[in-house]
Length: 306
Image (cartoon, rainbow, N blue to C red; front, side):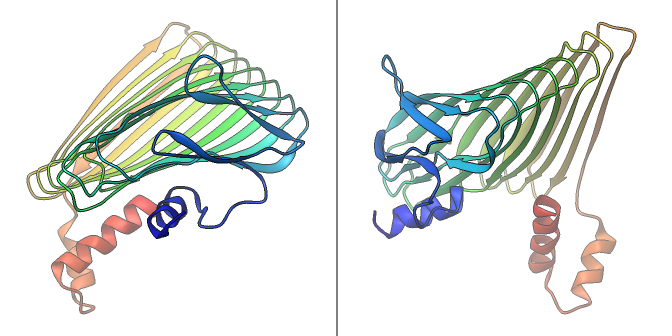
């Protein structure tokens, strides 16, 4: 690996040095390195690009890293990754993609991830997307996440896309069984003429299932973001979606909610707030010696990372 590889790995998965746990590193459409452990097995698919990640039952306090890096132009990368989480397991999965493109050709990564959580299992999933490079070629990331949760399972998702990505379409689909719990925290920054579209569709089919989606987005310059959510309550359940956005310059953010309460015992809520940075916040920081741009950047950083 060269310095660019190490920089990308550190940004998307904290892997500037190889982890002692299980990992699979993919570079420019090919497997760069892979390691299994007795608790977590990574098996390449036979009929298409991708891997199966198999976590044994009762595994606790273990992690697996599966980053993707792209350092060339003109690549269209597509992978299918399936995660099978055993009963009572508790693991952290760190994924994401970094594209460093110094060419005038567009590079794209499409990652289709399917999670199968057994009873009483817990997953924390961290996904980071980064775009780097000085070329005019696009850096496009289109992740699809499919989640199937059995009884009493829980999943936490943290997604982060902080600038540099030319275009992204991010889709998440979930189906929750009885007492299953899903929490999603999304943070997106777009600048220049970048676009980002997010779609969440969650089926709450099990009794007392629960989902919470929190999206923090910042759109600057002439960038565009679109947030769509669809909660379907088919039983006694609770669903909450919160979309908060900050606009600067000529940017635009659209939030499109859909709520379908198929059961009288379902409770579904959607909240959205989109606007500019409050003037009193800027003034307070500028009285401390910051200029307007520095004050805006500090507010944005706190909003996205806080």
